[in-house]
Length: 335
Image 1 (cartoon, rainbow, N blue to C red):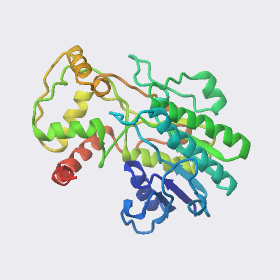
Image 2: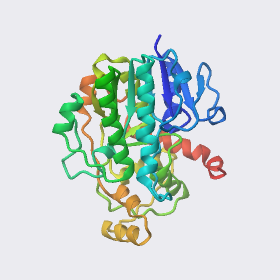
Image 3: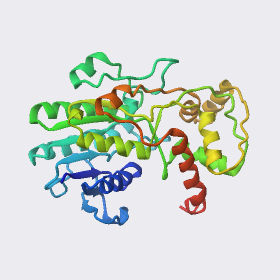
């Protein structure tokens, strides 16, 4: 029976992975900073590792492990507060990942699956020009695909990927890289949570004129894809772009949310140029760009290489997320 170590197990993605892997009969160990950060899940092993950094001691957590799914990261922050953001991201996302990979290789862990980010490729795509990857080894990817991280988070993820391929070549540790776009589902935060609050409030939403295309991936679909990477021999040594396989506009997302809670939604057609100007004036330019811009992913190679297809449609996934928020909004407001 495969034993998987999930890092960042108390986070949005990590918790879902632990539950999904256990349901499929895997032995699962959760690496967390402290025991109190992780809910009780029957059958789940817990390993406390403290902060993720260049000096983290992973030895206990890695004992008897076959595969690591590395989700722990300093995640993207919309409004940065530290003086040197790049250094802060590198400390966790690069140095922390290198530390984990080196110790995993020394303890004969077979493989490490790195949950990276589509931000490695860039922030937006043009019409009919989705991000794509050939699914081949790092050497082919490095020479044949554009990578254009535009913020410290994306750059740190790219640097971590590069370090992992070097470690893999030197030690034999099998590496798989998965680059997801926005992940949505119960427990979501950021822009998606803001949209949910808007829809539930019934306040008119000024995004009716937006005509964009966004690739996303539902939490259940990402968990299913990462499970496939754990089990599929064809995943080794490759980089995969992850998505639901169906692109959707921001107004469509909002309408699906409204359907999920059986409420009407009022979309106002405010010109995108005015929204962008407002975002610039209010210091929220990045948020507006994500709501109005396009980011498309071609995940055909991922689906073909891994013989995988998303089990949950975008329509169902967004509706389910909206229902979760409507059912829990009062508890969430108290947090």
